[in-house]
Amino acid sequence: MAGSTILLVEDEKNLRKLIRTYLEREMINVVEAADGKEALELWEEEKYDLVILDVMLPEYDGWTVCKRIRQNSHIPIIMLTARSEEDDKLFGFDLGVDDYVTKPFSVKELIARVKALLKRSNHQLMIEVIEVGELKVDKKMHQAFLHDEPLDLTPKEYDLLLVFLHNQNQALTREIILDRVWGYDYYGDLRTVDTHVKRLRKKLKHMGKQIVTVRGLGYRFEVTN
Ligand code: CA
Image 1 (cartoon, rainbow, N blue to C red):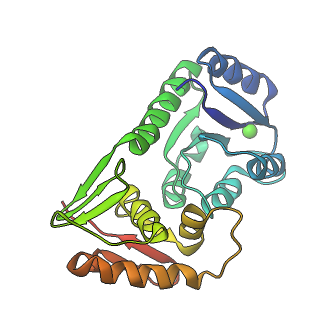
Image 2: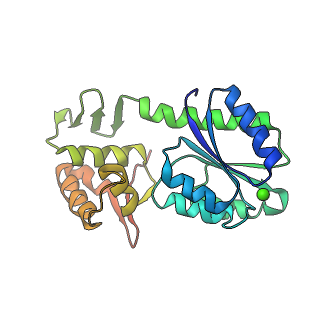
């Protein structure tokens, strides 16, 4: 996954440098943060492909940073935990942590997991045709079909459908949806999301009910296999 950029948040300088060296050998770009506050500042500044996040950090701890990142992003996150923090893992999975590496770890193993996660998220973007039941989206054609009939979707409705299809069975907050479909720079009303979901549901006919409202949070595209 050469060319990817990783935000590496770790307060132990030597460990940070070591991880950086290994990542750079894989041609991965690394942006370093030494505490939680710096991490969140750097997070706002650039687009990353993955975050490596230590739990015990000065300023804000790793959980706080993770929570803040998850408010508007589904970026892969690997947490670095100490053995004594094992119990916190369940909590972390609720926050949407993708993977854990327990200290002390071999940097090689960490790099292997980084590569696996980057590959997975890249793969998701590369797939060109997504099918769920009678619903099909051809990304090359930029066209959605229901029972092989083309659906007449606006560009935003199409983007919204893609966000749901890329995040099947995951609860998505309105903020995340707004960010994914309308972008970081859009300061619109969260109700914009509701309006578009309503229209998309209608156009998807019987499949529209697979977009489930998650009360107090947002929406989830439900798929049972
Ligand atoms: Ca630490």
